[in-house]
Length: 261
Image (cartoon, rainbow, N blue to C red):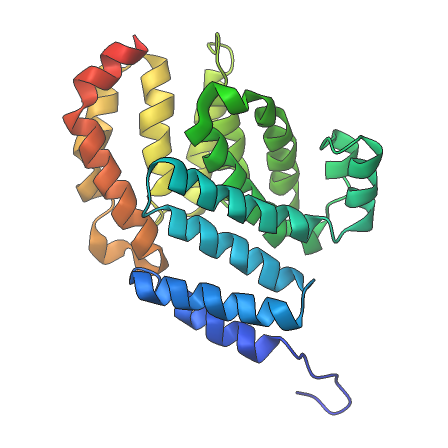
């Protein structure tokens, strides 16, 4: 710390919790990181770094679950993310004026300082909508608005991935949208090539909708080769779950294809 520079009361504790979170492939370490983040938040209730970290951690925990429990964890992650975004007075005031609706005007108030909260919210909200299906279709438009803002604020994978997901999860004719969602999925994959998540979603949503059964099955069959464990890096938990899901989908590919077509 430089002379005269104020001490950051959160940073050291947050870095320690982050180190534990990096070991999230082990369930007990993920749980420990969540407890550490919650402890920090109790002392610093509105710190955006901690709120964003908790949102990410709950989303990570959801990967290992199924059914209602998984949706509940994503909903919890989404709530922390939105709480983080609401610290921006321009955003929160416009949401309040719109009776709780997330409008384009509200989203435009989000800046680079909100990017971590925005991406954490998008990750959780998109997965929550995916799990709930048509019942949550009303949430796809705010996700698209937020995803576009995320892409304006940075070059990460979450913005293009969540915008593509909002497109392919929409019920009804999509033919005119598919070239756009394909490009967004490719952007997300290229932005974080060691992460298998966007690649899996590209296969199980984009290729399925495009009607290319051979391409759909080929991507799933070769998933272990395109994302081998020794290349996971920081994404060990997410990639392990993605490989397992790809294997399940490949085994069920005939049924999945018949259900769609």
